[in-house]
Image 1 (cartoon, helix red, strand yellow):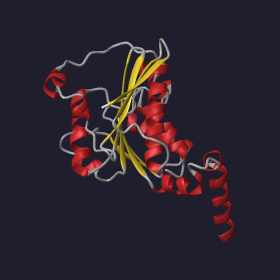
Image 2: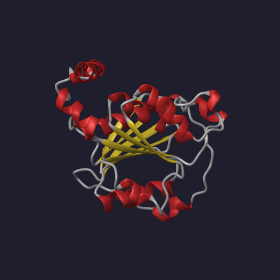
Image 3: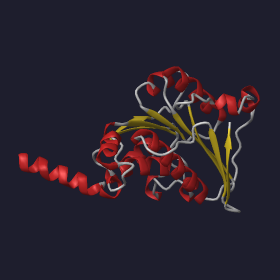
Image 4: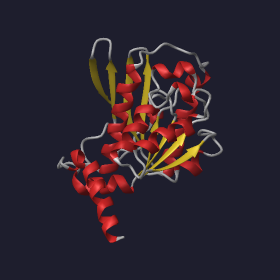
Length: 242
């Protein structure tokens, strides 16, 4: 049994060697990731790369919250899923793919998504939240609950060829409501299906995953009090302090 345990530890070390080679992460940072937990709210275009990269990086526990099922129109950008999984709940379809990628990660599923009734209970269980939703009410709910629970959260949004990323409720305790104070007006907006290039959520979701890994492993300079805006049509970026 001791030899088996040593073999498993060696395999784990080999799995993450390209990360632990980085002095900013090293073995200490990798242990922090293994002990960390993150809640991914929304398993669509943004949630797909976020969940994939957090699992691949060795985050020990991932919460997956989404009330939707996989549809054919998702497959253009939601790279977690296959055509075979159309009609399945996204949480279960995502776990199937992620568990195959990272069998040592624990996955908790929230098929009902994040609601006003369950948000505080769920968010309180995690070290960090990644916002991959597509509506203002859920985003403002996250802002309120994460502030109440003292949890940082990584914001991401997309549209057409553009995206935004930031970190809220980090060490500077900046709030989403400070950046976007028109809560009532934004939450009253009707939901509309809009076009988006499939690679846009891939890029923005990867940036969100990077921000999450920085916060969980303790390296780099987070987008705390800064909003990163990227236009993939022109490849122009800007960072706005707030």
